[in-house]
Image (tube, rainbow, N blue to C red):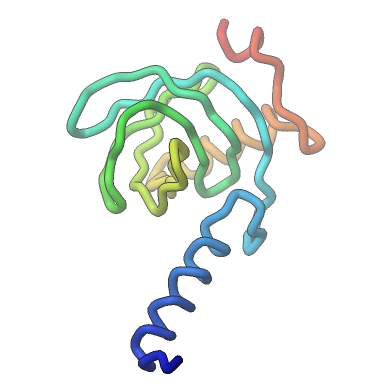
Length: 132
């Protein structure tokens, strides 16, 4: 059985894409903190929806919600405890989970201070503290 070069390359691309976009792939400058915190997501197309934060890092997050935004779509993440909206764009999708990259701009230092104080020693802050 012979395969064309383009078919082999396409197959390899699919495999690499799946490996590179799994929550367990670790190519990060800052660690991901696993959590299951409730958040609000404001998708550009549908408005506000409740979601679950699966993990968070200094530059992005994985979260789960029922809508199906596409790669490149934009939105806003709202997380109790951080006063500003966190703009993002969708980088990848894995079943019902989105991988987003934050677009922090002028909020970067405030976000990093909140992130570091809230997610101490690699553990998520308690939900009750976030929901106040």
